[in-house]
Amino acid sequence: MPESKDHPHGSGSTLEVLLAFLRLGLTSFGGPVAHLGYFRADIVERRRWLDEASYADIVALCQFLPGPASSQTAVSLGILRAGLPGGLAAWAGFSLPSALALIAFGYGVDAVGDLSQAAWLHGLKIVAVAVVAQAVWNMARNLCPDRERATIAVGAALLVLAMPSAVGQMGAIAIGALIGWGLFRDTAVRPQAHLGFTIKRSVAVGALIAFVLLLVGLPVASTTGIHVVQMVDAFYRSGALVFGGGHVVLPLLQAAVVPPGWLDNNAFLAGYGAAQAVPGPLFTFAAYLGTVMRPSPNGVLGGLICLVAIYLPTFLLLVGVLPFWDGLRQRAGIQAALRGVSAAVVGLLLAALYTPVWTSAINGPRDFAVGITAFLALQLWKVPPWLVVIAGAVVTEALSLVSL
Image (cartoon, rainbow, N blue to C red; front, top):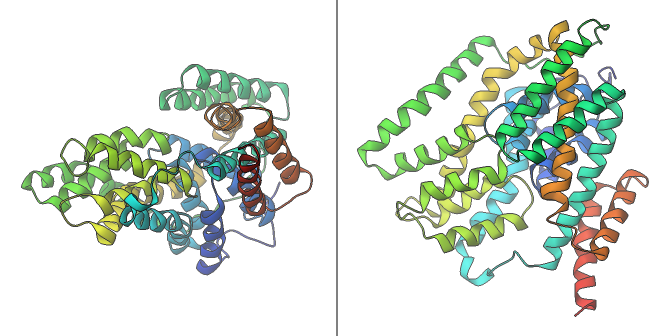
């Protein structure tokens, strides 16, 4: 599908991007894979900021880079729409609602208690099943239109299910790229919409240098014993060295903050339960940790420091890579490889639809009934996702009360 003339790349305002991703940040429950489904429904289908293939290319790139894939996708879409200010606006809109909620939870952690068993939270997980199923269904129709790419998708899903780790995900994408390069090199080159990331290459190179210097320099600086430097170092490295994002970062954060005595393991697990109850990216869990850690800085200031530190590698990497990515994806060989990569991305979503999305949400016929109804509302009745999210939480809570 060619780029929409109504919404050319780079033509949007920062406020437009902020409002779009603020709505997503308030309603995108269910983890990183579900977030990609919400983005696709709102940004690709409804707003038409870019076409399906371009969106798949961006998702594929973000799966390769270390850091939180859904947040990286959000920032990339914001940069695409309104330049670097748009990227910051997309991050703020998508991340700050959950970050502020978790900072508030940090102040009232003892009063709020454990949220992990709440029925309404389980309803949000069920709706996430429908959102991911819709994304897999529609992306498969567009990106796997023939038996070769459908086979790549299923093979990628099988590999990721057999190797449920970042290695399996990256391996599936790499194998998809090799198969695509071998199968589709001799086919006609598809017309590609220029993504047009408005970042100078000198700025991109500077960002990559800064990424490496901070990764190497912060551990050295932290030997001074200055606590705030040690905080920034711990959270920067967690954001820079994790592949797959989301739950994968939890053991790194736990190892960074519990052994030094910055907080105890019970406080860590209480915050993790709260993070499951808020929309948006799990990386905002860093804001909670910064709020409750000892010694100072903590509170709001500590939360914001840790939030910025864990996301800084994401910004530096994206600013460094995106200007070169658009040129690479125009080449015939790269396009052939990307056909295989796009199919593999569908496979990753298909595997995630089963685990953890389905296995953590569908526990019986009642859950299945709510999930299939949510899918029907999204796919056929075109009900807005935010409304389906609210309805899923309300219905599941009501059903739990009836069954008591």
